[in-house]
Image 1 (cartoon, rainbow over the protein chains, first blue to last red):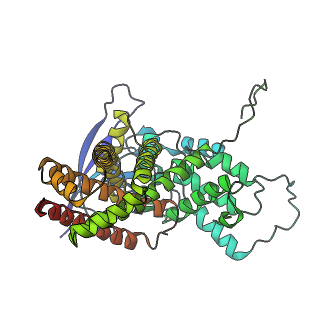
Image 2 (cartoon, helix red, strand yellow):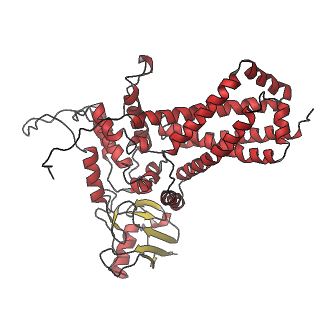
Image 3 (spheres, chains in turn red, yellow):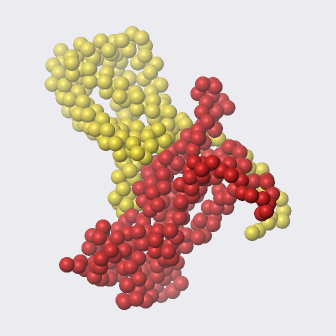
Length: 253
Length: 219
């Protein structure tokens, strides 16, 4: 027999001066293979057309439908109701600017992050559109792709205790982004230039190793391993010049 | 894109302080972990017999290691607190955010960090008191330790301090290993399980040691 699900959803419209933050309850019958994406669309179509939430691809690719589901950040389209209890609480992702209800503006945060970490291949080479693309070792390309799979949903940032406490902390997504460019041979940045970006208390040395990022990432990115190696790499980069040669270490990501 | 019209920007001065401090925090923590394990092994030698503990204590006394090592450990203890406190929220707003996040997420590792921060504060006070009492009444002997514990209040004191230290040491060891990439994601949960077992064993040995002191006949 189909369950009746109760959803407690955060409601607030910052654009409306009369709006007050509150929780609103909705009840809906569960259907086969139901996801939160389906629930929210049905609620909006059948019960409340003013309900605000983001979605685009409904396939865990765009990262737009990130929200806090029963306390944990996750993607609405990836979350099946059969994995949830009968009562579910939905909140918008913290850290990001609230657009309304469950919709947040991750774009502004990520745009700022790109600029802070220079999220592009830094090169002095002039791009020649007619030249054949430089070849890259397949294993390396796959390694870069593994980190490039980040869909920038913001779940790792919303789950991170450090990012919640400290606005200036880069967060796992940014550190992963820098690691991705460190791997890329087309990026000509020196170790010192990378160090200046992430070798700080706002960067990798601010990470307290809570690993919520690793545990909530809907794309299962290897964040624990990336952050661990990045810390080692930056830590050794800082001391290699003062260490005796047998203790020096060049850490590969 | 905005282009500044006046070039007033000072060149960015590269600072490696954060890396040095992180190294120091990790190394001082690792030293204290090793010390605490060694400390428990040495003190728990009283389970075998007070003579064994006295012999070990005498060795450290004769070699002057306790006179030199004690204050050094105390300094490392304070240094580690200062370094680690950089990450602990002292403003109540930040504490509230962290606690609310841990509660909301039901996330074990976030809770472990909260436990680590709380135990750190308790250890700072109780650990300092313990070190003061022991180091101001050298040499260490099983009889003196037993007399102190049989006082009753000190037994209660150590029954609180023991789990605080072992939890802090256990979680600290786990966190160093994962934060510094020594244990990878595949080994994380297995390692955490072993670390929890080790912590439970350490607390068990500590309780048995305290009971041994409690029942030791004082000459």
